[in-house]
Length: 150
Image (cartoon, rainbow, N blue to C red; front, side, top):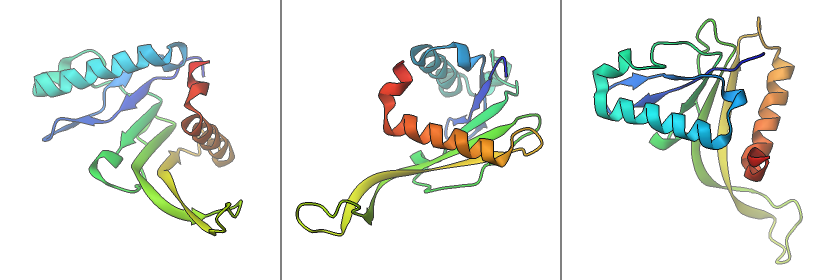
């Protein structure tokens, strides 16, 4: 794609909105963060006026939904046509996982901080194997956030 426009689902307690952040692939992390802060403030301050604000009512190619802030562990997002994918982020929590290295203390389990991310793809647009590769790259960026700065 030449351009990727991302809808980000945000709410103000009584309503949900999905404003679009345009051309995310050409923006740096700081620019995306500033744009997200702008659309979030419109939702918080103007409520109903958000419908007519810039970026509201448009449909991007990708949607991000964060239900983790409500304590939801995971969900299966629905892809809205004409979008290609939707990513749902779950709660970040401590989980007990196998200790692959065995550890110095001989413990076979360890506690790790984990988050569930679920990607739904419209298979007419994105092949499932390509979606899985994208999700693996996303996982790598979340685990090594310095890669987002390069």
